[in-house]
Image 1 (tube, rainbow, N blue to C red):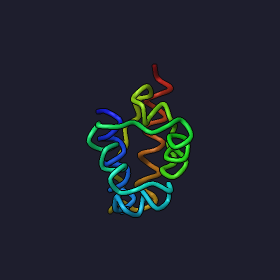
Image 2 (image 1 turned 90 degrees about the vertical axis):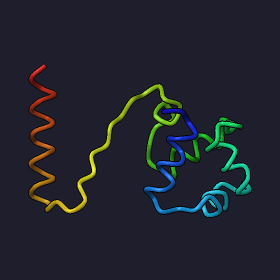
Image 3 (image 1 turned 135 degrees about the horizontal axis):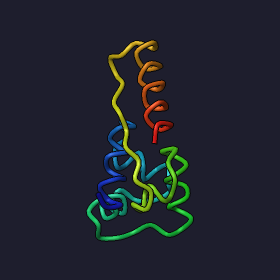
Length: 94
């Protein structure tokens, strides 16, 4: 997945429109669209702000760090905690 797709996925998950994200970044909607379509890439300072907004690393945004997410919506707190324990157990078994 490239930067544009990552950005779009994160934006949609956070329920932001392109205009809302543009407003947060002090940019225009067309710039956000260009980012998402791979026509432009953000400047370094903008990349850092994007990472902060979505609470991800710049490495993740750029595809250097591959992180997977698990949708836990609909699960109870206990079920989420059980998943965390299971993941930690699997990590520690390697």
